[in-house]
Image (tube, rainbow, N blue to C red; front, side, top):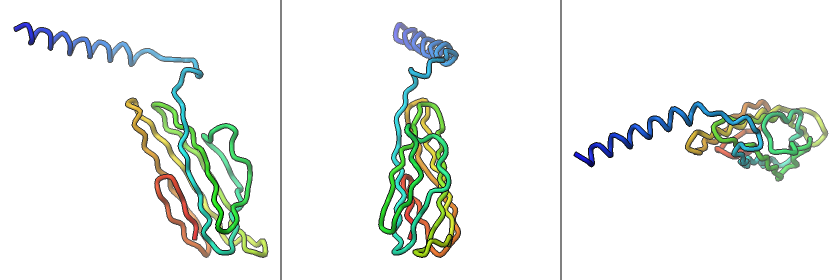
Length: 144
């Protein structure tokens, strides 16, 4: 009988704690739990350059500067990871031939979602047009 009473009281305590703790809000940005997740873009073409034309979203500060990924090169982006939030960062590349002509475009969206239990889902998607292929992993994009 005593064990049953203790179990009921414990369950009530958990329910009450969830109700009161979930209604509390923290307005101070400095108290948020924040980290970052690395995403890599690999240029495995033999002669095409990838020039950034758009860098926007939740990148780690300072945001990446405009740049060109040379053939065989890569670039690492750090996307903010915030507890109980979805963070998104976006890239757009102009694909340049050796003579400097635009031969295609690549658009990459990177997402980092972290839930209440600090479990993180990481994914990206990309769209492209041009004489190359694009392959995605959860934290990388390879252009061939």
